[in-house]
Image 1: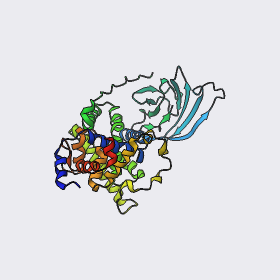
Image 2: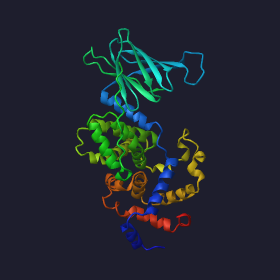
Image 3: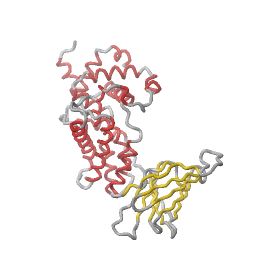
Image 4: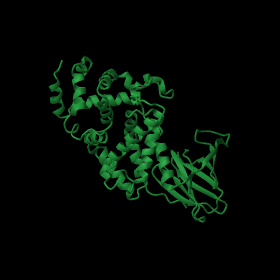
Amino acid sequence: MTAPHDEDLLAEKPIDADDERALRLVRAHLDLLDPVPADLAERVKFAMTVASLEAEVAHLMSDALELTAVRTTEYDRATTVTFESGSLSIMVTLEAGERSAITLRGWVTAPGAEVELRERSRSSVTVADDEGRFVFDGVERGTVNLVIRLHDEPGARPVITPGIEL
Amino acid sequence: MSAPRPDSQRPGAPAEAGLAVTAARAFARHRDGDTDAMGDLVDELTPLLWHTARSQGADPATAEDVVQTTWLRLVEHTTDISDGQAVLQWLLMTTRREAWRSVRRGRRTVPHEPWEEPTSRDATAPPRALDPVTATEDADVARAVWQHVEALPARCQQLLRLVAYVDRPDYAVVSAALGIPVGSIGPTRGRCLAKLRMALLSDPTWEVTA
């Protein structure tokens, strides 16, 4: 067997390609043995957004109610989702638009509220009309959140929806 | 009507810069008001934080809570962290401390090593046999290397588990965050990698394929 001082010598030498290979294999093995939960980063980001906005999270009331019977492609359908928070309700309808982009039509029980659509790497802001309706065109597939702000009510917390899968 | 903000360009940090530098840049962007920066940081560092929590003995559910708590603390402490270069170390140390606390007050009274858990712990995990890595002969060597890692002292196991997830420039940060003196790993191989190397040198599985 190797004497203990060999370990000292090895310890003082620079890291070489064999060390890096061993570490790569450790990583490959751990990726199998102990994978990071696939949605962990997304859940972390949502929690951080809620925290930084000091927002109230709206709860999903109904999900994936398919409105149209005709379905020529998997995108050719409309889906309606409803969320509720302590202060308001939000209804969202998704429609397939040009190419793979989506039109998101919504209605909120707060006419004139500011509505922000948060996509993966951008966000858009609009204002709900007098009847509480709002529209976002050309939304990319992915997970989005809506943030509703009631500027007329001082002190009102923003309301954020959980992720909506498009 | 809707006024999309332009996609912010991700300033692809050179690979040799390491996670500490990438994290510092993203953190600086975050402080400058770039709302995507923190998300990029989360994507980049969550795997490392997961393994940090797991290597402290947190079970998978606890590790998820620990990682989430750590990131929320970063949001709270954004203004307290004056040196962006320290963000990676701050995250690692916070994860380690949170994991240690959770494990102590958790169901388990004796901290255990995560790799001692029965392999059937997660029924939702994809079947391992389907993973392409297991189909390669590297998988056998990987198993052999892992067995040697498991035979090392606990501190070395923790260190190598994390070092496997970072690039060389980050080794010193990782070892410092684990409370293993800086310099014990870094430009030189250090004690733990030396121990692993010794084990591998006497292992025919490794000799044949190296």
